[in-house]
Image (cartoon, rainbow, N blue to C red):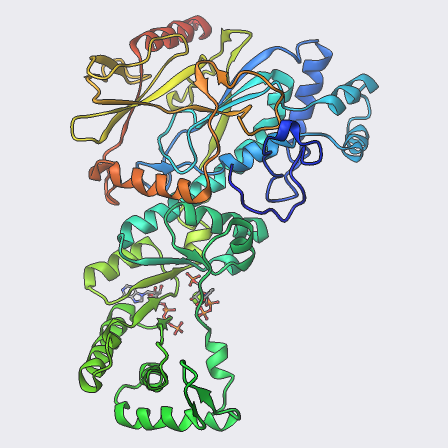
Length: 538
Ligand SMILES: Nc1ncnc2c1ncn2[C@@H]1O[C@H](COP(=O)(O)OP(=O)(O)OP(=O)(O)O)[C@@H](O)[C@H]1O
Ligand SMILES: O=P(O)(O)OC[C@H]1O[C@H](OP(=O)(O)OP(=O)(O)O)[C@H](O)[C@@H]1O
Ligand SMILES: O=C(O)c1cccnc1
Ligand SMILES: [Mg+2]
């Protein structure tokens, strides 16, 4: 379990010790409580209870239907917060009082039932956070008493939807920038409220950013913090005369320069050729260098960033050459100002000398696409498969409790994801398997996998959860530990790199194949025909 501190109070079960196991902390945002759901979930829970079917064993899949940003991949985020949520799922006394006031016709027995609800009978299987994922494949499979799991629909989608969207956005910015660039998330001021800002900082780090300017997120998640300074700071000085304490001690403490400002001005007189802040920066950097300090660099925040970065780099290199200041030419150049994938792509095409991009508004608001559109669909109840039909074939759900695998080809690339029925034997390395498009009869392919990866792992009850003692093996899958944020970031970067490049390109990327086994295909279409009414023409 991630050992990040939380600002929201003690870990559930902390006092009791729960057999000495570590326990997932509360959700990062204290607003994430069992009331953070839609009213209709309570209406349905009441109806399940009233009908005596609240304990029916249900299986729901959480998935999305289409990749965002015109791309052909998504990065999964938000799992840890879901696990924190169910680990601490409990109605407080005043939650119950409030629910009584909004559901005045419900019997006392229903509220007694709600009071006693927790998630000890719920199981959550999920793809590890930070994984590259595709439409239709369940990101999470949630099993448990139908009335309880129904209450999880809204908060789970809420926790996964934006997290996955912004992680994907961050990953896309990483891919267009290239591995060698430093990416700084500067979005807090433009994020959709405090929660948008905090979640964005965590997710952008997971999606491949290096650091954030968001101090609260730095503290909550242990993220690297970085920052420069703004125009206000520069323009707050009317002139050098304002600087009263002019002394600067050498870095090694050996002596003190009584008038550092004059030292800077001497340098400035030697290099003043460019009409910008760059010579000012260089004069200070050179004077600092005299005193044994090393300046870090500049940030460009307006104008033509490709041109200005090139001019600044030339200036730095000329100074290195002229005055023999080692590595002055390698001074870091950060750029910001309404950057996004397109502008970074344009800068790359023009050629530039930027080392670090500071990206805010377009990144955290997910300006190019507002939501991912995750859904939570019932796929089985009391071992009976359920299917949701729709005129729109992309909206037909894939029934049954399923297992999901990623099959890798000879060159090491993932070739296809495949869903099978829960009881089907898993695909085997070196054994040919038929992969079928779930809805299009003619689309199918044989695959001989060189590697088979099972995608869904059991995260709840986890082997570090507050869940009651029970076998750590569920459905043949050993409970997985939630990885640290750093590990999820590594997973994300490694998986992005492992994908075939044509799936990842920005323009007209090739769709990655998502399939079902032949057996599941037949079963889906059998159910479909069974459930779809036959029309009558007159
Ligand atoms: N070389 C470039 N190629 C493509 N886009 C660029 C380039 N340089 C900067 N941009 C982008 O062009 C836009 C310029 O913004 P804007 O019109 O506000 O100009 P500005 O120079 O920032 O003005 P101001 O100084 O008033 O803020 C920004 O979105 C920036 O990221
Ligand atoms: O541009 P973003 O990608 O959102 O990145 C963050 C921006 O926030 C700051 O300025 P701000 O936008 O507050 O003021 P400015 O536009 O007047 O510089 C900073 O200088 C960046 O430009
Ligand atoms: O540190 C910076 O340069 C910064 C931080 C937030 C927003 N804009 C810039
Ligand atoms: Mg701006």
